[in-house]
Amino acid sequence: MLQEIRRALPGEHLLYVADSAHAPYGDKSQQFIEARSIAISEFLLSQNVKAIVVACNTATGAAVTTLRSHFTMPIIAMEPAVKPAAAHSRTGVIGVLATHRTLASANFVRLFARYGNEVQIVGQACPGLVEQVEAGDLSGAKTRLLLERYLLPLLEQNADTIVLGCTHYPFLASLIQDIAGAGVAVIDSAAAVARQLQRRLEVANLLADATKIGTECFWTSGSTEKVQPLISQLWQAEANVSALPLS
Image 1 (cartoon, rainbow, N blue to C red):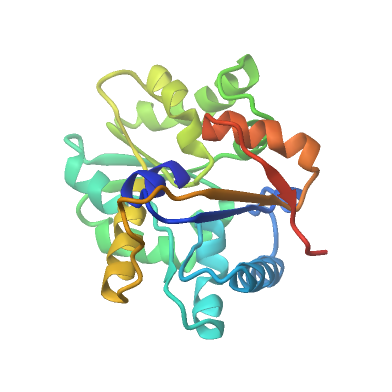
Image 2 (image 1 turned 60 degrees about the horizontal axis):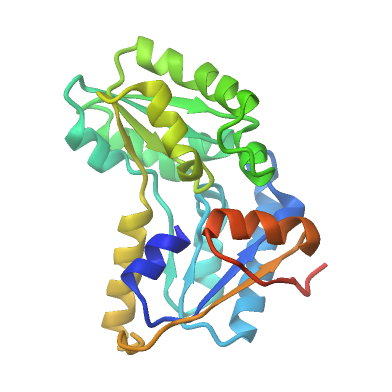
C-alpha cells in the first residue's frame, strides 16, 4: 500500500504507523479496533497530517465510520477489490482471501450483495498469514503450506481471480501467483486506494509539489529492534522506525 501511495504521490511526506504490538486485528473485538484506530489517528493528527489512509481492511470494517464521525480530514478507507475482480473473471468465480472479521464486516456483506448476482464470490479466511508476514517469512515452507491450504479449495471451485483482502497479503503475491498458476489473476486494491487519496487531496487543494521529494517516517507500537528490520525488508529500503508514544 505505502509503495503505491509513494508512486502516485512522490512529493508527499508519508507517515506510517504499524500497530505491531496488537497485530493481527482479525481476532480483536470491534471496540478494541475502534479504540486503537482513534488513538493512532489522534497521534497522526498531532503530526499535522492532512489525510489518513486506513490501510487495513479489518480496521476499515470495524472503525472507519467512527473515525469519520470523529475527524473532519479526508479519511480513505479500504475495500476488497471485488468490483474489478468481478469484471475480470472469465469463469464467474472469484476467491477472496481475508481475515474472519473482514469477511463478516458490513462492508464485505454490502460488496457480496452488490456483486454476488454477477459472480460467485467465495470468501476464505486465512488465520496465520498476517503472522507470517509480520515474521518476515514471505516464501518459506510454512507460509507456502498455509497458502496452499487456503488457495486450493478456491481453485477447485474454478476460481480464476483471487482478491487479496488484507493489506499484508500483497507481500505474498508472488507466492500466491506461483501456487495459483499463471491463468489465475491476483488482484489487490492498493493502486485504487492511492488514486482515491490523490483525488481527495486534489479536491481539497492539498497536494504537495510533485517536483519535490517526499520523505517517510515510521512508527511502531511493538519493539523497534524487531520491527525495524521487517519494515526495511517490506519497504525494500532502510527505514528508521520510532516507538509509537501510545500505551
